[in-house]
Length: 373
Image (tube, rainbow, N blue to C red):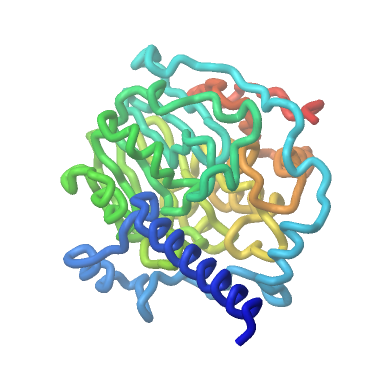
């Protein structure tokens, strides 16, 4: 063997060893969470929604629609030139002081993407919080848009119920969950998701894991229902080993549907018929693509879902903070606003940090995204 070939083989083996070492230490990071095991896994296996070793949607739901491939989608994402996928300007926002809210106020405050705070009947809820400035387990891989990450975990008050719709990184953020640990009384999530929280040091007594159609009475005025969604779950190499879903928050005064991530399906009409009509529907509208429309609604489907829910107001979320799809950053809000011009539903489109008054159905919002480059 020539000296050059020996040198080449040595360098190649060194690179393989280095890659293996990096992968080993990467996989040992706590942020990946933990797969369900023991009694938690036994409960999962008893669920009617768990078959063939994983959770299943109610209807056939491949991650990519027919005619698309992962290779094609990956190529288009990284190499197709789509103007304005990331805003050049800062995202407009206002800063509501959540630590000093009056207990009498029934409000919602959005943090961008699918993270928001709600206060209803004196109870404080926090949904899918992401305050780390990144929607990926890899540092800097999917950073928040400039100006969209104005809140920190330190600016969040004590939370009665942390609601987690599913365990993807843009909804269950390791760094944020660690910082919120002293502030959260109870966590409500789908089956299996509690394994992540336990691995991150949360007391099991704080965890409430639910299957689809389970409900929880939190006081004499309020119930929470865990509802199906059409999506998927998993962190790294563990697809669909935890349950994804939506929440219906039913109080004596308000009915609010918290949709999580979901493609269009029969579960919306079912919720509208059984738990509606809803005063407010908060639905996934952004980071969509024809290639994965079965797991994320397109804007016209979001409007149909809101009608199915018999919702008076619609708050389209899952936009304006992270780049995850090949559309301009502001297209989700532009499209749904244009499609809704002749519709009867009222759109709720606050700036990040702006108060949404849950008891004022006539509240008006500006089209704040206009003019933002």
